[in-house]
Image 1 (spheres, rainbow, N blue to C red):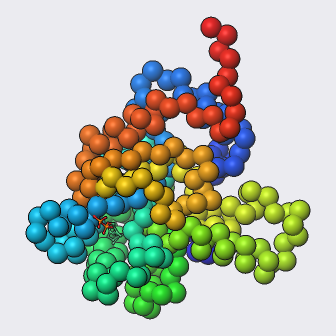
Image 2 (image 1 turned 60 degrees about the horizontal axis):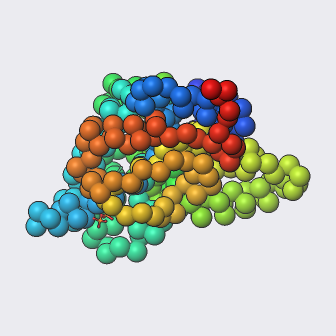
Length: 268
Ligand code: FPP
């Protein structure tokens, strides 16, 4: 796993902490739903292909437009107090798409990594790859390493880029790692298991947004999303704007997170 080392303080927002669960619940009484930003937002960026097809363009043009949307969403969420953003850029299953589309997305990844480092540094964004790197070419692996290294000192939003990522595969890898390390069954707690995931440096996602109108999780953050809130929108990823993001955040802000608990008696 390539979880980075660095100054990410997880003590106040461990995904499995009961204390954190109750604190989140207490915070749900705020009057302005936008005032309570989720700490970690994760996004399934769906709809690039349809965006292109609607315009009579090749699917890859939709992916290119999809990449252009990423910095705008990063900026908007950082401004609204979000500290971690995880974007689903390429799943383990996406390798089975037609070769020109796969090669085109990988090329886009390469270009983006080379082009965006300065911008991320200016914006104090730390970039972390989550997923497998072994099917990427050495050149792209180097570019991934480089952007992680060059942004590792940034203290603002952490941008997890899920590329060649699959939730089931991540869980299997964590199980295998624990076995390899000889960890005894009684030591396998939620915290220990979570720490063997790519996202060990991040709290569990508070809010998962899926664009493009589908209502499924598609092998994304399966372990981490046990108590995430979901927001679906028909808006295609390249068209996601601040107004729609605010709708997602307001929807989140209006929810009462109970984490399996009961609604507390306020005595009123
Ligand atoms: C889903 O749209 C999108 C993808 C499978 C890839 C998303 C990729 C990017 C935004 C570009 C690569 C990312 C980086 C960081 C370089 P779809 O193709 O399934 O759309 P459809 O459902 O309309 O067909």
